Length: 257
Image 1 (cartoon, one colour):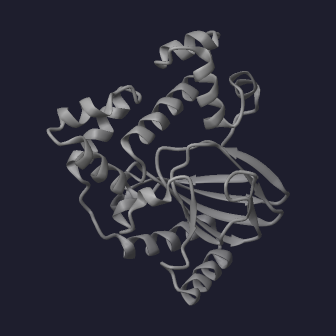
Image 2 (cartoon, one colour):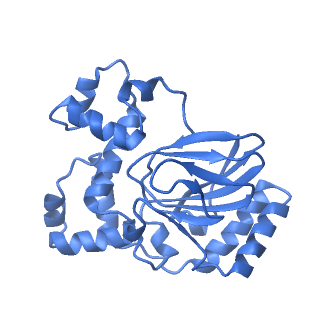
């Protein structure tokens, strides 16, 4: 598996974290952990499928993957090639008008957003591109044409910053009060833009922060307590949901991309 990372053009940087071009000469299986944003995928050759999970089988050629609560096992067939667009938190809302929280835990085909003719043309451009840099330019032309909302909701942006700063430890009721908005109105506004409820997003931020730190010779009981869990069994359950593995197996496994 060859993976090349690219940074977005300045116009798109507020919304897109980075791009990945993934090419597999041989069959490969990768465990993908839930991220803090949505992912747009364009497959320009070969097949890619999900093993197990809620949507097993071949994945759509062009798709938008909502935020997930659990790790996914993705199988890349020999000769497959994909361009991934990894959005920043709330970044996808600048390109898609659909309520993004409806995609939470699912993957949707872009057939209703891109006509079959346009999809075929896009796949041909990506497949015949002379370099991965050219593939990124093809994708950026499409994204630039879809950029609809250049201004991020300031209240949601403030909420995201506070959740990230506390690594997901904020109580949602207290957060809404601090932003001078009712909890119901806050949650509706947040999930429509971010693609997850504040509670769901906070849980992802907390677990991603925990995984990023690693165990560093600490006991799992200490890790659980530091993350705000009252006991290790509850922590173990949430950790397995997030990674698909026990804490011991996860930290012994090879690094993921």
